[in-house]
Length: 161
Length: 393
Image 1 (cartoon, each protein chain N blue to C red):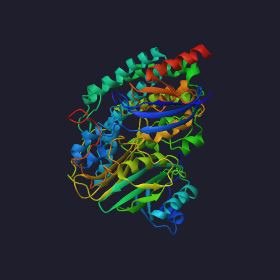
Image 2: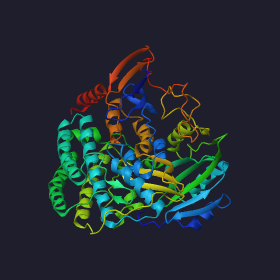
Image 3: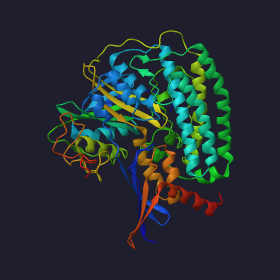
Image 4: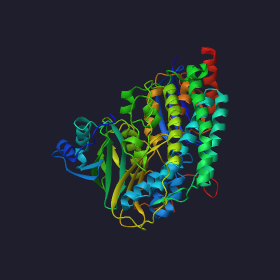
């Protein structure tokens, strides 16, 4: 396992054939860009022919235009395979991958809490990071989020209520 | 007996993290576990977007009081990768020395806390005394016992003079002897055997499926260690072994951590003896070009990931931090199912998270609609008492 050779870009291209383009950031970082509806298929292929058995993180970026999701996977080959997709800001929803990647369940809850992305089919998309008295429709890590003076964000008020 | 809901936590962020567990138990046996992390979101990721790289480093130092060096190293090496800057070898090895001392103080702290949770307070006192040796070394090397302030983008902020190297080397041998003593002790002491063996068991398949990281995963034969698999800051040239264990229980996690303590001593000794001459830091540009970096780091609790996006400015467009404890929660929920209520403190402590010290536990009996409240200390006392009656330890 230790001396397993890293994945080549060609391996990933072959496994992800028809899903999207593959690029390489450095020796052990490969990335494939797919459309949101094909993310689950890309994860299945990464787990199948590429042998990925560990999800490192689901990275999320709000670049001001769209939300980017980066599913970072790795396996015995010790190469990070990143599946990247973009979601529109006005209707950010994607199929949940909690059944393919069990730890994704908790990461998706976190992303939903902070960015308001809906993971369809998630069994328990409850609040995870923010307090229960945080306003329902505000997502603080979005780039365009600002605090509204007329709202309460939890904690006590100067009047002590 | 009807099922009982036992909510544990959250609220008080004093020393430990606020986490809420809702434990559904049938008598003494746990049937299901629901998790509500939260109550302490400090918005550090958002704040990082508003500060330049120089100012983000002290901010990230405060993500965690124990793994402060882990977060700053993960961030600095990510930004350095984006900038295309190479840290001089001497600076890299100094980073390694602080990183491994941090791992030692964290594991010694854990060993003491695990001892405390099972009522073995002698172990707690001993390991925390030995931890002081590590803390003293960190203070002499960096000027601080916690939040070392050592890292900067481009290298480290302090050099180590030869007399200090000699003093640190002298302290390592007695410390190593003490760690060997603990390795022998936990294998023979009836208390640790009764309370750790077979508790919180996680198979290799489960550990992989639930995305566990660090000593928790390595105790279930999952052979992942970022220091070897994705080498950073000079680990590629340092001789060390990745410690694994096949038992998959709290006992295995203890043995892995003690084994890692010995490996850390070995790494620190090697780094101190082989410090190359030269500068410890290079000047870096103010901004970073458009880049996307996944910076991985083997923190004491497991794999830490910083996903960094830079955009031709001196600030990050996005910093996404995935801490090892978040990755390990899923496995806690799994490994507790089927075990005793009395094992909660030690199984939760075995992944080395932090739980609120003033957490209150409410016991609800749905049959009689009665509610009683139990504190974490009372649950701990219940665990110790349960095993005293059952096993005589």
